[in-house]
Image 1 (tube, rainbow, N blue to C red):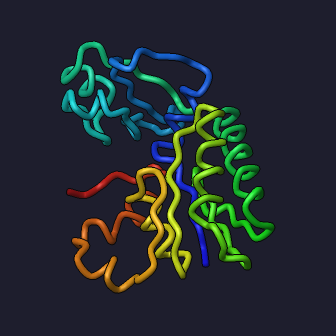
Image 2: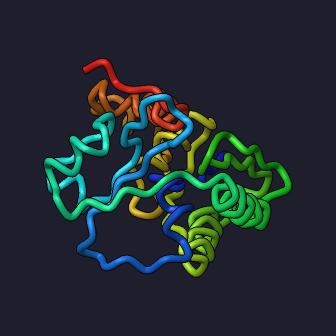
Length: 187
């Protein structure tokens, strides 16, 4: 069995971990290293105000005048990733750093997996990191489950779980990777 621990909006969470913005504050994140910085991640308040990933900061501000623009921080991302890895290693010695904000864990002992992953997610919460966990028979299934979890989702029968899902949901892993890499959607 495998578990994936996933930190949604990893770069944004890393930047905001030691800040306490009001829950009503719209925040967008840019990567200043890009030639033309665009918003790469948003909090839910910014999304509900109509701001979209791929917009320039000025386009985002045109949609939401109170939008606060933050820049990525490599040091904060590294620190947050280390905490994520530490939490994953409390579950098993078989951990892969799958990507920014994503760890995949392989279990040899399959007892109480939901409890174990829930404890790791709670530990991350104590560190001001909101995470989700997915458990499945393959790394891919656990990865998809982690994206849909609130906060932990165990998949016992992959076919029953995957069959009714729309193709947009099944491509979530690719979209997450592309967004994390700074690619924009062609929609």
